[in-house]
Amino acid sequence: MKEIPFVDLKAGFEPIKDEVMKAIGDVLDGMNLNIGPNCQAFEKEFASFCGARYAIGVGSGTEAIQFALLACGIKEGDEVITTPHTFFATVEAISCIGARPVFVDIDPLTYNINPADIEKKITKKTKAIIPVHMYGQTAGIDPILEISKQYGISVIEDACQAHGALYKGIKAGALGDAGCFSFYFTKNLGTYGEGGIVITNNEKTAEFIRLYRNHGHKSKYEHAVIGYNGRLDEIQAAILRIRLKYLNEYNSKRRERAEIYNSFLKDTPLELPVEAKGRMHVYHLYVVRSQRRDELQKYLSKNGIGTGIHYKNPAHLQEAVAVFGYRKGDFPETEKACSEILSLPMYPELKEEYQVYISEKIKEFFRS
Ligand SMILES: Cc1ncc(COP(=O)(O)O)c(C=O)c1O
Image 1 (cartoon, helix red, strand yellow):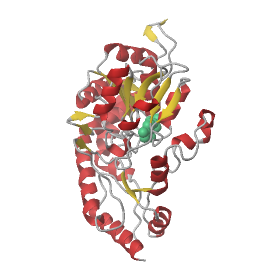
Image 2: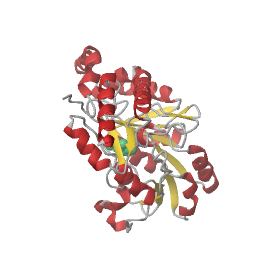
Image 3: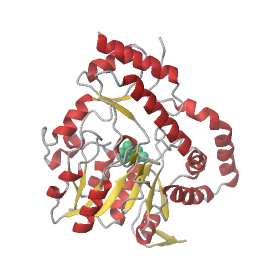
Image 4: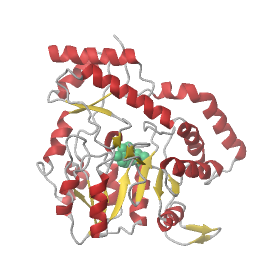
């Protein structure tokens, strides 16, 4: 029996090990650790990669969203529209600043927020929309930008799963007022610890986040605003500079792996991922759907295949946000998806022979 992990971080590390070890050594030799040369260089390199004017490194994707919300003026009592089908951090970032998450159900084909349902949720208190680019594919941004213009609402993209994804040729994160990324180690662009970044074309937003992430530090001994300790670590920035050079290659490999799965699995009862028109999916996750999901997951596990569920419980039903009063049945597409989705192994180094084995086991399961 083969053992196929859901992700293989060691396989990704091996080819760049020498470069990474040297970069870490150089950081430690320089001891310039607080928003040092690597952090500053990476910010420029990532902004240029995304086609944005500014990028500000922070401590995590969660901080990126929280700081972007604050920079856009969102405060206690405001409402922020987002999707219940996301990693919980999106909702945490909204709630942490005292705002209320207002959910809109997903489009079941792309798993992203359904733009057609947004307008009915807008009230006088709505101050921002956070579309989450789930699994590596951007949400349908044009209608969201229309709504934002019409109502004067900020659009903050949660691009934590979509490094390098495109919407009509524009990079994820560079479509709205601010774009937020996570560099958690499993992401398409991940580091070997924690990290995040906000990109924006707005100088004031950039300035605010630059101050805020560093205790409001304007100059030595001068604090202009009450901020936070939310900096991007210099060693992580040095690693990110290396991995950014390979991001296009990593994403191409993920797309190739997705095509292989698509061709092997097309005749099974599984629903396969859909790449919507005008978008380039970067397959942070390759997510299939089946009403027999739990049985299938067990069968694959018994055969040595690691899988994941992203995510099993929708955000609106989490105990942590019970205070907002959402109920089962409020977002039927999200709830249905959560009970049927399964993430198959997906990483740039995934071997084709593994994909053959995984596909065979899936076919075997449906025959049984
Ligand atoms: C959609 C989404 N939003 C936010 C985050 C939070 O990022 P971090 O874990 O870096 O705080 C993640 C990371 O898992 C994510 O997938």
